[in-house]
Length: 201
Length: 173
Picture 1 (cartoon, rainbow over the protein chains, first blue to last red):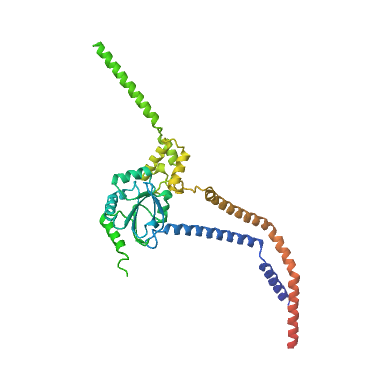
Picture 2: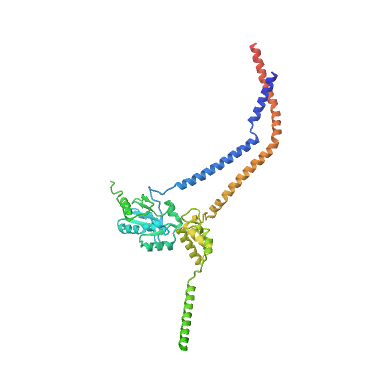
């Protein structure tokens, strides 16, 4: 019985001591929470960054609305062009591929300007001086403007220039391309946008 | 012959005088001043390439950067200060050209947050470290005290247990 008494007493005493959280355990908990908090914050930051990076150009749905201040001083809002097919071309005077499609775009504009098609050129991170020189060099006559504070290009999440969006009569993005275009390709895209909705009852 | 030389000299002097006057007048008309490459680079160091990631204008070799450096030179030559040139770029191309938000509040948050975060972690680690150190010296006596405090209760419950056991045994007999 003496042996039993000593053993059980020891067990009960130890159990009582173990059941109470020690100060050292409090410290360990604090570190676990601290590290966990840091990991959660880092994961959130990383996730948001990744999400932002993975965002691509819109290829469907309503085209983001904007108002373009043209280099000739006119303000053109995309909303006011509803009912017409709109070709939005992002370009820059420092962009080599843009130069190869500049004359093609102007030729397409000349062909479609009286058929309910509007062209808008948006100069990305360009200076007014260089943009004007570029437009003069290629004899471009459709409305062009600078993308102040790169707000329009941010809305369309462009990743470079040239990039072209075709907006249909209802204001939806009909097509998007991120390569330099020739007149045949531009015409085909415009034709598809023009015929859209005509075949539907 | 001498007369001819004299007339020629006088004509040359007159032409030179006219040329000097014309040049000085055109120089006064043009408000631009010559800008050195160092001045352009000093501003370009604070602006970022519109095409590349994290490359400043002064070290970037793209045509876009070359055009922007030209723009910096023109703005400086027109009498703008470096700060005004940078502000001009921010107004036209947005905050990204300077790499940090221009809004004072956002800029403060962007610049201070990493330091505050690091300081909080350091303080947390320091607190835990010093707590461990101070607890290490007290742990042994406290544990001994706790063990003596717990003994009467434990003995009491053990006695109850023993009493119940004895009564059970007696009942079986």
